[in-house]
Image (cartoon, rainbow over all chains, first blue to last red; front, side):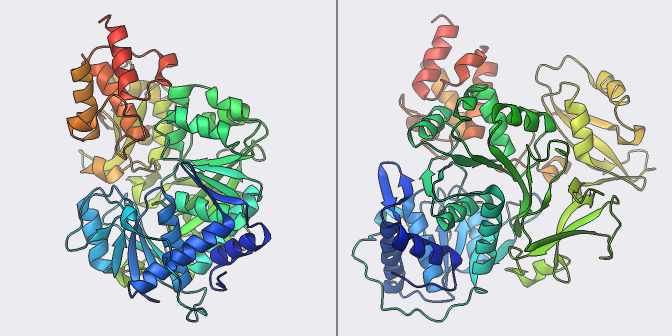
Amino acid sequence: MFDAPHSHVLASIAAHATSAPDKVALVDNDARVTYSQLVARVENAAGLLQAMGLHRGDRIMLAANKEADFIYLYLAAHLLGIVNVVVDPSAPADRLNYITGITRPAAAFGNTVNPIDGIRVIAFGDLDLDNKAILPLPLPSLQSSDVADIMFTTGTTGRPKGVCLTHDNIAGSACNTNGFIGTKSSDIEALALPLSHSFGLGRLRCVLIAGATLVLVGNFANLKTFFTVLDTEKVTGFGMVPAVWQYIKRLSGNRIARFAGQLRYIEIGSAALPIEDKRLLMELFPKTRICMHYGLTEASRAMFTEFHQSQDHLDAIGRPASQLVEACVLDEQGGAVPDGADGEICVRGNMVTHTYFLPQDNDGAFYGDWFRTGDWGHRGHDGLFYLTGRKKELINVGGEKVSPGAIEEAIKSLGIADCACVGVPDPKGVLGEVPKAFLVKGNCPMDFEEIKSNLLTKLPPHEVPVEWAWIDAIPRTSSGKIQRLKLKQ
Amino acid sequence: METQVKQIIARVLNVSLDVITDDLSAGDIPEWDSVGNLAIISTIEQELDVEFPLEDLFDLTSVKTIVDEVNQLKNV
């Protein structure tokens, strides 16, 4: 049994393997892996990495395929102090080449859809994780402040940024989350989120720290499969992004409500969810803790809200996730702004990154030890935080900062299927920027003039878009965030 | 009609036609995720001029079920 004081994730797994060795940790298709087997597999994977000559401080690229071998290697790297560069298996070649070009991994594992220039990616199926003895412990003296993972932002703006996360960061985020949600060792979670994203990978760590059971599910595409897993595995919790909720709603109606009695929690995050959907979820799951997080890869799960407990404040993003997390609102010089006034939301705490991989990416990213989220909002007099929009996405109409989200909400309330707004140069050259709206027509019978006149009853005139365009689909990241830069181009 | 449906699925998912076998289901390949599934449904509705009944969408999980549904809607 390994001893890993530097990693709370590994130490927790080892403790569960001692106290409940036969408890199932992972379900991967037909395979059921107990906590004692998980420890043995992680040790085997560590032995393999050692046999390849890898050691503390090296970086490996791991394609986050949804399979147990990924998890063994991911944890084995932590055990040895090797840094995981986690990538999406279906990432385009350009992105993979950029990431490997700057991180220069000593080895690469997984099943990537696209090849990477000059790098042999060892497929999980080609790994022999059996009978690989780990070299004698103790391991080199590792620190909890060592970097454990480098995650690359999904990039609503520019090129991806590598976010360095320490063992303390990833454990801190998981403990904050488990504390808020109330995860128990008796929980069984279905994981259909991608493991290459902060949300999905975070769920993995939450479950294993809690000593609960994680059932790996490919994705949400096949809802029949997902519902069968909920049923047969007696699942008590899962995580989803708002786009998945829209998908579940569209394809299955209210069918998911039949699991309301067994689901103790649902975690939602990564993008905004309309208030009417929050109310619908509360109606369908009256006894489930429906927890929505606010966070970024750089500051995972910084804040939380639970819908039933916050039913009078469903427009808020919540409060700091635990007593070890702080949030504040600062102006453009880094000075505090009073409650109720808008500014940039900043956070600090156990889960916040200390640095990006490239030092130049740190420019303007922090005010002292406060991480600047780039999100605009305020703290209400009730102590809750409210989001106005992405700072970089705010539309500056003649000095008035306009949130594209507020315009989109108003447009959608008219029955428009989907829409997104961006700031474009004022064609009259007076206001600086004006809003432009991209609309998905769907079954909407209205033309732009009708929409515009209806909006004037809902929005101040300067917030009503000046330019309009129909579009087939709103470009979004895989986690559902609108890619406004693409619309601007 | 079967070939047309399979061609649309292959094109929308950006995979080669020989991947689109009858028993291929949503989630079986990374390209057929929830976004891909929605794109398949809307493209077939648009290009083949059919409208899938809402109550049937939940069951359209494989190439075969989609082909069968289109055949039924088209009275083929």
